[in-house]
Each structure stands twice: as structure tokens, then as C-alpha cells.
Image (cartoon, rainbow, N blue to C red; front, side):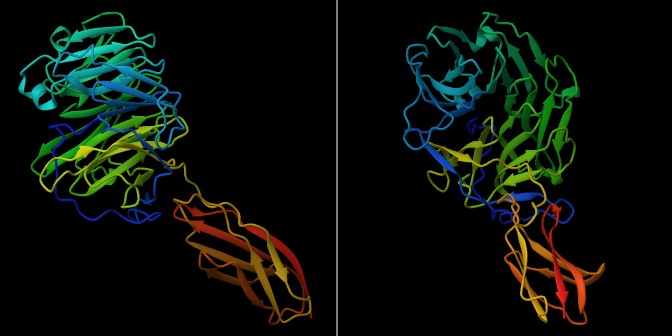
Length: 438
């Protein structure tokens, strides 16, 4: 997805959200990951649109070319394949939107610009390119499209969002059919109002994002439709409201077979990417949010796609001046998965040093394993002797030892247990048994 005139340019951006690992609120312990990307792919030109197939291949739209990269491509990697559309797009048109199917077939919407689309000054061109290089072209007039502004592959078909109708049409372009095989009309039960982004998973579920402007400003929303949804039907899931952490304008959506939904959004609250767990709907908190100055998401907007292993591919939009709309970057950033998250693992090996007859004993342990996005926030050490609790001490996340005074304990079999906690709660304890003989 690229920043279009339907996604307003917001020049004022407030401070970034909370730091890495911090919950968004006491009521909703959302993980906010402020961490650097793990990789960067230099594309050599601004990324006009980005898509990812089921094998993790990255499809980058660069004007009248589509570059296809391996999932592991980094730096100035050579594309696996380059699709040249210069002979298929009319003079004066460039690639605006991209949809990549899992079998490698790409569909590109070409036009003069998005401004020209919304002004209705000319027809745009839709080009379907097969893996053998054969192409089929259509005009938007042939397809009955007036203002296409988002596109996604749905199996062998292509879903197109039309800004003029606020609806979504699904076409069998490979079969040469110019009439939609399915349609979701705007408004009504579908809830489609000002849709701006669309994606589909391999099961055929459509994920659509957009915003509705009311007296309180833009209200972002995301809808998930069942496979094969057709007509004025309600979505299976509808995400909107303050707890979602969605910022004013959705700029990218992605989903996977499990039903996770990722949403990139931006506005006066900054830029973020939120992941919603399968099945969540309504005004619910996301499972995690990628946000902050270390992420490279940019101050204005970021499109997002998800790779099969859960890593995220994003493209930031960077300002060319203080007043001009931002332009897409010439690189794709790859981020670690946003979860799944859990409580910490057990701490490592626990030992108790010192002689059995010593008045003090030193308890040592190694760190508990946890996801870097959910660091250990504290630890607890408990000592019991003869079934009686003799010590319960909370220590900081970096502590690795504690001195225990035997006090009145003379002869007993004791145990020392260590447990770690993070924002998700307390993990399992690791313990060791030792003797006191004084």
C-alpha cells in the first residue's frame, strides 16, 4: 500500500509511545516493542507498493517494474526476478498498486497518479503478468472501476477497493472476466466506509482497513470478512475504538492463516504497527505494538506485510520537506515477530554456596529466558526449611545472587526457589535443596 490522497498527510507528529516492553496501560498490558529492525533490503528506488507471498518472497513495485526478492534478501541483493511493465502500461502511466499471488502471478494497477484517478481524467490500466511473462491487460472502464485505491490477491483472484463506491470487487482476471465474481458494497452491514487498505490470507479471508470522519476526527477501523463473502454481509470481526491503539489512518494491513491481523497506522499520535490475536473483535487491545524511534517506521506512515515465520516487512514514508507529503523509502525493513509472548521461562541452574555450618549462605542463579520484547521486570527468591518459609525476597531483574542468613535454623533440609516475572505474569520456579547443620 502506498500513501494516497485518501490517506491524509499529517505534518505534526507527537512523541513516540512507550518504551520497549512497557504495557500500554494497567488495564491492557500491551507489549510496545521499540527495537531496531533485524534487516534492511535496499531496492534502489522508492517502493511504490509491497507484497509478500506464502513462500515469503518480497514483491516490490518500482514504477513500471516489479522486483521479486528471496525472503532472506538483505542489503543490495539481486532480485530473483524482475517484471518489466514498460510495454504494457500506456505512455505516461506508472505502477501504483501491486497484488502478488502465491504462485508468482502479479497484478499491477497503472495510472498517471492517484490524483489523476480521483480527478477522473483518464482510465487506468490493470495488467496481469504470469510467471512465463505472458500478460493480459484491462482498462478500469472495462472492469467498472472508477477510483481504485487498494488491491490484494485472493488466491487466483484479485480484490480491488473502489473509493467511489466504498465497496470491494473481486475479479477473476486470469479467466478474462471483466465482471466481478463477488462484491462487498460500501456502507450497510459491511461497515465499509472510506476503505484504504486490503489484504487476504491463504484461506480467502479479506482484511480491510479504513477510517470514518466524524465530529471527533478520524475513527480508524479494520474489518475481517469470511472466505467467499459476497453481498451486503457483516464482517466476522470489526476492530475499532480507543483500546485498539489504532492511530487515525490505517496505511497497511496483513494477516496469516492463524487469523492474526497486523495493522499499520499513523496520524497525530505517531506511527505504529499493531498485532491483534486471532478471533479478537470490537474495542479490544492488541497483543503487541511495534512503535518508537528505533523501529525505523518513520514519522508519517508505514505499510506492513507479514512473512510466513511472523517477521514483518515494512516500508516507511519519509518527508521531503516540512510541508510536502512524504515519499516512500527506497528500502524494506524486516522486523522480528511481534510475539507470541508468554511469562518468562524458569531461571537457569540454582546453587547454594557455603558450608552447611555457615551462618550465611549465598544463593546464585542464571537468568530466566524471555522474549526481548517482554523483559524480566523482577524476580523473587523463596527459602523454606522444614516446610516453613524463612525468606521471601523480591529483587531486581538483573540480580543473580542473594545472601541468606540462617538465623535460628540449626538443622534442617531447606530449599531455595527463584522465579521471574514480566508484563505477562510470573513464570515457573527453579529450586534446589540444601542442608543446614549448625
